[in-house]
Image (cartoon, rainbow, N blue to C red; front, side):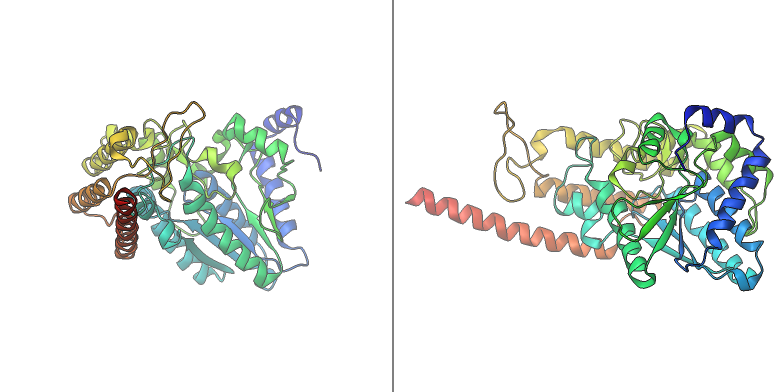
Length: 390
């Protein structure tokens, strides 16, 4: 099946939404009932697209007799450990409701939340190693905090089951970049595609041809099959004017993380010039506006530290200098003094907002990195003194 062309997209828009939703449901049912037993892995961020995707999957599988629900469904969320407190709370609370409902309704559902390896977290990278907060040209965060943890889980599942199907809520209408990327990979709502980096895993995007209005129409008209309503999700979007930072699987998806559009994601995100979703929640008069204002100010302070070369070492972490092609100096990581200042102010912020912003394991890892850095620095100074003496 070929990827939809512009004329196909126009045709989709002329087809009634109920007809298109019925077709998506039929496609999901057909794929789920295939003979193989490769599990379904549902990328779930708690945002509108992944919520609708999970709802349609749930409704489809729940419509089957219990004896035909043979394929396991793993719902996977990602916690970078620096998610916006409101967003991570929504994710975890919704996953708890979903898990309880799955057990009650005898749905073959399991839930997993991935996190970055402890030595790859945002704070260990910035405060421990002194990495400057991410920029568009030095976006080290997406790979370490999102792609690697989830890819590791995918590979484990493929190794155990011989294959897996990853279902994602990406849609062509999200952006021109998204449409170009999906068209380039020949993504179709009616078939699966090979995963670019995880052998044995296929990707399925059943919502590919829906637009924003379609998504909101369904969420406002249908209650979630796991119970409750979508009211909290709708209110969160309305107040922030944001979109979701989806579960990112490849570098091609990275532009969706830290893009110029307002998206819910890491409260520490310094890739964007302004965090419009966090700012929107503050300006809307959210009940936790004071807390979010403090987070917003801390993020702005991180950016100011990054932009001042006096805060950075003249060499890279390996101790070697680096120059640009024009001969100008490229500065290295934050100095140890700046890193200590960031940690001290983070502790102060943590007390002010009343949320855990850095874990004990991260602090232990940071102290270990500092200890090794101090030993390396003493070694370099001793070598320099020896050379000067000779």
